[in-house]
Image (spheres, rainbow, N blue to C red):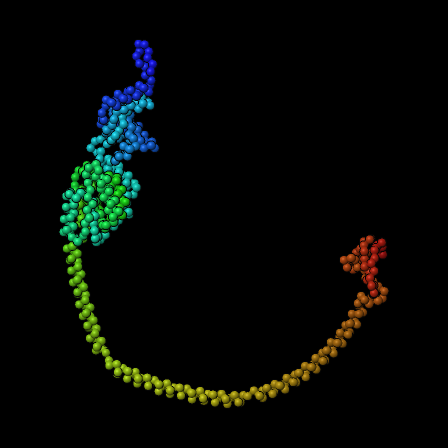
Length: 448
């Protein structure tokens, strides 16, 4: 460190900021400061940075991720808050700042604001959707109760259950219901009931109190535990006018702890009355049915006939049918015999022997006549064929060839009839009576 005469010790900027930081942080205790949030920044690191201001001044503030995760509301620009902070200096910029350890909305609506913000958040996630609610069992065998074992709520619930349905088994999951650690204690008991699976329905409850007294049931950790519980959950927190986050996420809200006990239990008096009424109804139904059956038996007894008489009647009827059947068969056979005799006589009158003999003679006559006609026709056609042959021979080109003529043809076997059909130098074939000649045209002379 350098020293200049007359000026004393010379500090570097970082040394000066470090010294000032020590002075500030060593002389200021933790303080509560109230003001309005502005210039709020929320980087991905999870820390938040903001200014806290009033009408005349402002101060830079920071709140680191671990402390921020403990907030039960979301800071926003323009929000009036109180912070419990230590006074410090950010050496990198030489700026005086407050490092917040706690943060609370200021004014009478601080807890209400936190309540509304959490309610909006969970509602946006669908945790209040009626479609996700589980139905309560009609006749549960075991009920679990998450509450203080010494509070008024458990006494009211046990009293109602003893009066309405004493056979219902009760399991108490003891927990704190008020204070800083109460919310985590409640959530642990709900998760324990979920793990053990020893009850059919679960009541999460406590007696009445102020908003601060009931605040444990407005914590997100309790709401998440209720949502994750696969046992139907009934919330019975406070009085009828009290509403908590637990009421919204539970499968059913009861206005009071006693009402929760009534909702999950059956009234033994009504059950007994229903059973007695059902017994009376069944007795009446059985009496009516027996009376009806007795009347049916009496009526059938009157109609009942001795089976031997019925058998005799059927046997007699069978004999009668046999006699009638035999008579019908004989009559039918007689008619068929008469018909057959008539057919035989008619067949003899129309015997085919004469017809066959007559047709055989006719066939012989026709055969002789056909042969004679064929012979005459052949002779006639033979004469015509000889005459046609002679005529054909007269006009045949072969006869012409016999007289010394020839037939000229081109290479394509086209007959040459005029000098116009050929040209000088063409090759021709001359067909004679016997044999052919291959010729070449040396000159074409027109005789016209």
